[in-house]
Length: 210
Image 1 (cartoon, rainbow, N blue to C red):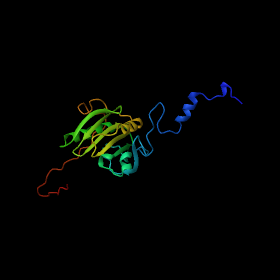
Image 2: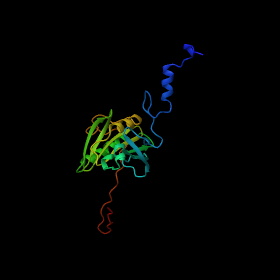
Image 3: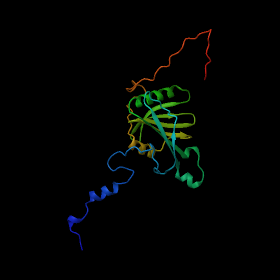
């Protein structure tokens, strides 16, 4: 029995079915993963490990954060049975309780990095995301602030970060970095609390722990 034209599924309906259940959204940014990072292969980079991290690198005043990490290995190098530092890329996603102060804290962190010897910090656009590039003596990272998150991708021995990974994370965490962030005023948010310094008492000196 031949179906009538009215009974045939439309092309739009068939495409909608293909979108259901896929990790890449059709027509909009993907949602942030439940555990922060993308736990699947991205392009020619194979997902290898997830880990939750207690130490949060970018601290935001009065805004608790939890960090999640993922490691990706170059598939071609794995097939050869030899993996070097440049064949491994790490992604860190820190998730905060609120969006308040996240961009401000990251920009302040980047400015402090730029003042350290051996580090170069630049603002760039990669994979359609405005981000901060940090180059060290033996490491390379990109950072950007997103809503309630800080994304960091890179590793040791790297000269660049795969565009596919920046695009994949940018789809789930669109950058909120403003143009000229390194030179302009800090984004809005609370300042880090200052630690009060006690006056030195020569009759009752206290040891300094470093």
